[in-house]
Length: 266
Figure 1 (cartoon, rainbow, N blue to C red):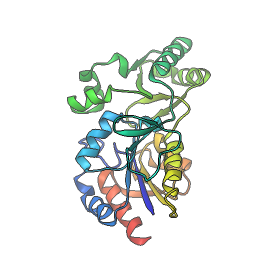
Figure 2: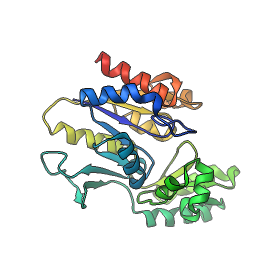
Figure 3: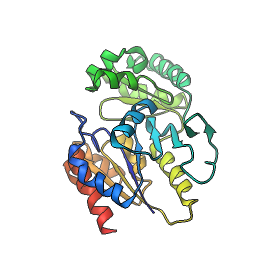
Figure 4: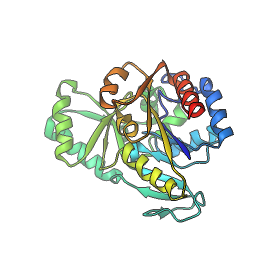
């Protein structure tokens, strides 16, 4: 069984326009071969539900930098281990509760004397301006559960802030536009956990992973075939994912190129 784990922004989606039109050939091929495409993003559950509907995707998905795995109820012919049930999903929670993260971010900001601007302090209009998201999607981005994106306002004190976050027992990562504070989870942990569940189906599992930013490093290091979709940080990210291939093109064009190459050749 083949599995495709993919980031969204800057990977399957264009970093500026959020289009994925250039990826249509690979998306059609994944559907034809019935290969699960698992969205693995810093986006919230509400955002990924929007994109799953757009992409006609019915597979499990990973939210907020690995904070939780959402498996549609009845997707597997067995109960998902270590999950809780909601009306629509079996949920594996790997991250820290959102209020705990906000407390830790405030404490780290005070400790480091470094001001930050988190999503919880922004309205949807501000998030839209900083992210380029349409206003409706910015509202979905505020519905956070396991991860807080933030801007650093005193950029010269960034090292002190990040050290203070770690002293609070939390982790941090950097995406395309924002830093993020997280609990013990990351994308790689979630990818490995979900791949293990697929293996319970009794078939060998081969994994392809695609990402473009530093917060994708753990994802890429957790798959059999890691692909870095070209961005300006790709050469630096490559030093963190030594076996990764870098695409020639960026965004959905690079994504399309890589997916077709891997699934047609193996």
